[in-house]
Length: 205
Ligand SMILES: Cc1ncc(C[n+]2csc(CCOP(=O)(O)OP(=O)(O)O)c2C)c(N)n1
Ligand SMILES: [Mg+2]
Image (tube, rainbow, N blue to C red):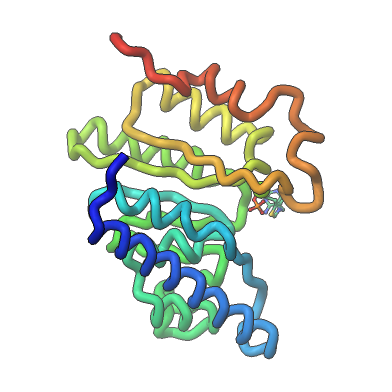
């Protein structure tokens, strides 16, 4: 697959912005300047850059507790994002959300969430809205492998499959949800479950 040079440069710059933002967060958090807690996604930069390279500006994303890079790639204002981490009024959510809840609907990021797997059902709702209103919008829901055993995963993904909604569920599988190896709590592999929810779209409906 050929990717235009301009797009490749945009993807590279986006990955660097993501990494530099989080390098700064590490420094400031380590110095005790940032209150609360932060979740990082260093090493995962290619995922938001690759996804946002093909989304339209008004498409939606839902993300998780590790959502800094998704918002950077979707066009979030990094100064306002950093102010949010400091809990300042000038933050993207007036300092009330912090690292795990960085959200900016103005650029199509409908939410990060500290409660694991919340985005999986919110994304289904956003996609239902897009289908009913015929907006042509697509929703991408980023989630971690730790969500695979939650009720929200099954409810959100199954409804989207039944209703044929314009949503992509993207599992960022680092094989370590919290302190538990990803395969320990799973009877069936993640991709086998995905297949049962029409992972491979039918050619004709
Ligand atoms: C409903 C709920 N249960 C437990 C937690 C505690 N918790 C925080 S992160 C995490 C692991 C999440 O794993 P995954 O979704 O794979 O994301 P990762 O941290 O690996 O990127 C857990 C269990 C939580 N935040 N929410
Ligand atoms: Mg994980």
